[in-house]
Image (cartoon, rainbow, N blue to C red; front, side, top):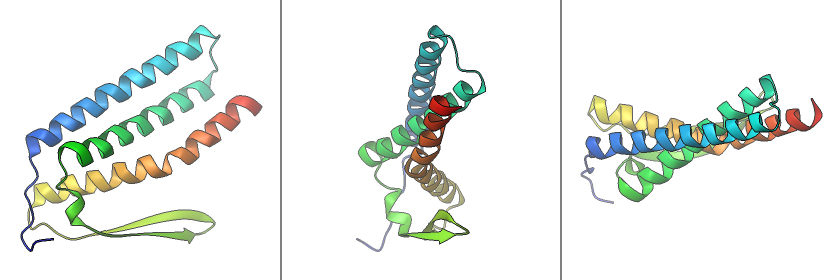
Length: 133
């Protein structure tokens, strides 16, 4: 890795955000229409749809950044998984880019990466509620 950091292309990042949001909304709507066709599930259906939509967004944003704009990964120093009060916690250490706008993009990238990784657990809980609630 070189000492000089590459500057992220903010236009491309906005394109990734827009594309991920559209795909997440389409995925959430497709799932919603599917469960409504089967008679609906009440509040559990809303919960599963919201969880699935956020997981889809996190997945498309994370992999979109890796494929099309691989400049945010250079600001991540380390990831550690810790148990905190019977919960699993992910701590991501980042380095500063000396640019406030880039730091905001790095925080968004870290958040969606964590949301995608940890979002699978609430989805499993929603599936449990669907079958047993």
